[in-house]
Length: 270
Length: 47
Image 1 (cartoon, each protein chain N blue to C red):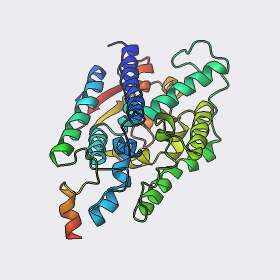
Image 2: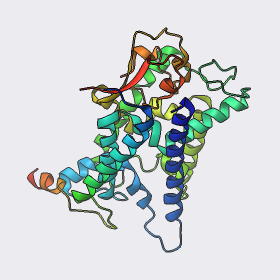
Image 3: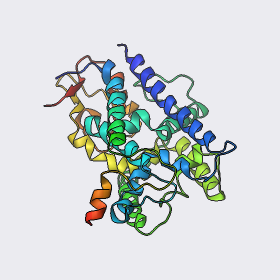
């Protein structure tokens, strides 16, 4: 398989997710559809938001239902086998961010993206190392806050702030418009900003990078050329030595970019 | 054991589908109203 066909497969799966997101959003503005909140029931993170209330009361939060748990199980299954691959391959919000980052690069001077080569484009920006490091912990805090809040709320805690609703749902509120604008702007300026700093689902899946059996490994044929570092949308430095980093979204862009056969390999660890 | 990256997308999709189906089999199916079925109800009844 050529390098680019792996990327093509990824893009295809990602865009199926995006189209699916819009179709679900459209379905809920069709005549005859009422209730207004069922968009949430297609969200795997809704399963996390409604888990504690369900365990303690036997009822799901409003706008979520049991389907959330099945979708969450699907995502957890993928995470159990491959780590955060859901983020890199299936999440529609991640796809939109990839698209916006590429658009930002083009807007800021990049004509053709050459894989593994430092772009001359001014965008996306890289935050200062220290800020980047500590901001990445914010998503874990957000996850904890959401879990705690879910015990006291009627609707899922993220309901009014959810960027997925802002992007894919067609029922907008002033707050969702604000979220949408913030999401679009930050995604153009900082690659995968939502995934790096804010996404509570990514926070929940991060630990699986350490235990999933399907993972990348590096060999001693790696000459530390840094091509994989340049292509990493999550901004992981020294990729060959950080292949189980909790920030890795297992997109395999590093594998696709590697110019040395066998330096990076996909393996099932026993 | 080495895996050909060509199979990676299939691994993801098949795993996702299998686990979603497991969820359905456990009773976590789409419902129009708030649900009370599923194995988790057993847990909630114990707590």
